[in-house]
Length: 69
Image 1 (cartoon, rainbow, N blue to C red):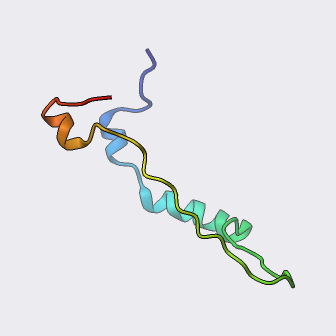
Image 2 (image 1 turned 90 degrees about the vertical axis):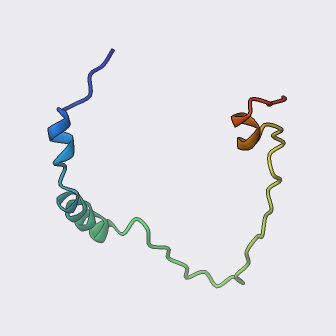
């Protein structure tokens, strides 16, 4: 079985501000979330509806152990 890296104390002192600053600089340089849309074509979109999954066992029935499949 693999051990987790670091002790509980090391995990508790993870510096989120430093990690965000590091990656924010990379994202600002590469701009991976920027969408360039200089297409002359007409703008369109698709409104798609997905059906609700056919699940007969809801959270309420799981708690009461009356699940049917």
